[in-house]
Image 1 (cartoon, helix red, strand yellow):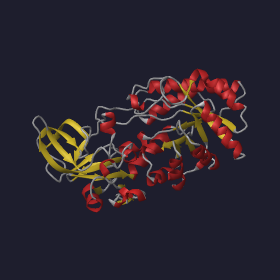
Image 2: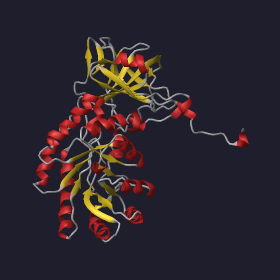
Image 3: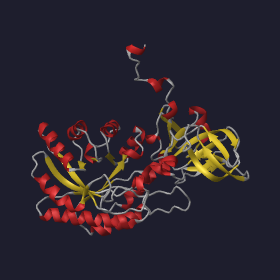
Image 4: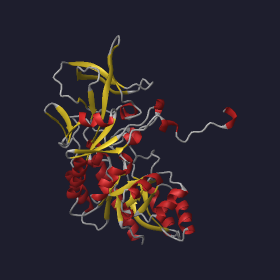
Length: 420
């Protein structure tokens, strides 16, 4: 956790603030992020790639709180977005439009128009129909849409199937062997300005080989396009570098990743675009929850907490592991428990059959590595208000999202006259 999350005098701290102090102010559950961990993660990338100075586009879908976005923008980051809403967030956080790339398979005409008028770096095209829609929209605006075409390199990243995006059966991108024809069609479209090639093979990847294989294909395609008279300025290699959720997880360091990519580029003058997300923010956040009840089942013991799958869905959705700690460093004997939430689903759990020090009611637990795909995937399922988000900087903490209220749950809903 990059030394920003640690025990001091037996109490868990985020930087120099005890978690208990934050909980006294905002209650539980709550997300807490470390500004120093975020900065350190970004700087590791920047330093690793300093010899080629790429555009490091933080993947907004990992965590889109505008305080997080502003922090990355101040560090000089660009942004990888997948919706008009994310574009609005980035612009609201003073992100540089010239460092924004727009991915995603289902961009609407309104989103395409918003991107073109915002003068972003480029849009990653995912299908021929989408390319045609961009051409039409750009001509209506009397502008050109800067685009890169996302190709599907059919490479197995050896990760969870739900977060594998570069296989032949994936919904993402255009088949590699069809890419040249699509580029040729794009090159004669009046509303299209071709600037790059793009691929993204998946997420939470530990092996550098798939990245190298994908990059080789992108360079091969870019070189071919240049020979065909289609100038390529950018190669967007996507993101996907994994992080450590368990102690046995040993992902490559950004330096290893950079060395491999720089070697594969071999001095070619394409401008590199990276789209890291999880590896920048995943280990910079935790979810804090309180033990509500202990329950002895016939075959299991349950620790029932006040957070639930609607707050952090990764364990239920991906069967993902998150390390969990008692906020008070515990020396109690360990027992086998399920740590579960109160949502009415059997899949509502944070840990199953986990060896864990004995806890008591009202103990605070910290669910680690929750900075990515945590709050952004939360919901109001079971009519549960969404939780607050807090950012810590040194000895201070700041509420960067207020806890929703009960009244917020029905905001925007209306009862029609016929049932009043």
